[in-house]
Structures are given as C-alpha cells and as structure tokens.
Length: 155
Picture: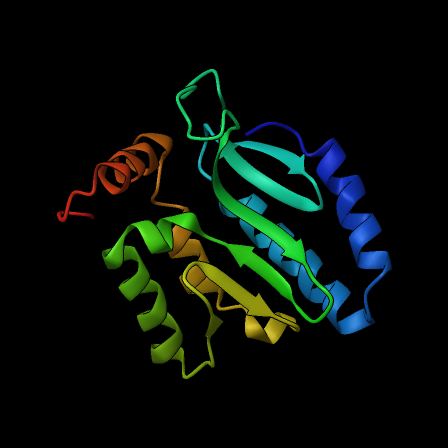
C-alpha cells in the first residue's frame, strides 16, 4: 500500500466540512480501512474519494483505464460512505458482510456495495475487516474477472 499523503489532506478537508459526529466517523472509517488493507493495493485520491485500488502496473486492462477500485471512502451531503465493489461482484462476500451486521444486531444502511453511515457506531468493524483483510489483490482480480465474464460461480 502506498503512503496516503494526498488522501490524508483530503480527509482533513472533508472532515473539516462535516458536523463533529460525521467527521469522527469518517476518520474512524479511514483508520480502520487503512489498518486492514492487505499489501498490494495503492491508496490514492480520486475526485473527492479516498481509494484503495489495484495499481495499473499490476492490472492495466480495466474497463475505464483507471486503477481498479477495491474500497473507497467518501462523504456526501447526508452521509459518509464506504464503497465495496467486491460486495456486488460476489454474492458470497455480500452475504457474509450482511450476516456480520445481522449477528451484531446492527442496522445496515447499504446499497449494492455502498455502506452508508453517519456515526462511528454505524461501522461494524468485524464486517469491514472481514470484507478487506482476507482479500488479496489476486483474489480481488479473480472475482473481478469472474464478474466481468458473467460466470455464475462467483466466490
């Protein structure tokens, strides 16, 4: 993982514009994702998102010629968001993520792969850690290739 100089600056900028509870939650999510990220992903800024992606040097054949995003952190007018493309590419990962929230008795505010939260209490550390830590670059690329090919045996 590369150093997050630009992302740390963006984090400060985003947090400064938020109410204290949301700023705290944004910082907590950043720290959790950063501490959990497996080796091989690159931390960068894309627009107003902090992204952890597969570097183009490792996988240049992306659909948009941009690094393949594994996780992104953003904030919108009404909430913070963690984006997990793997959750909509892999039914198994999605089910495990949702089950972790259910087991903890936590409300999950989620779209296809976007987890919305306004406070640190809205983050399920176990679910987020389990969605990130065991997924090395090779595993993520395999899931991406399966999803792009339309394979029904998505892991």
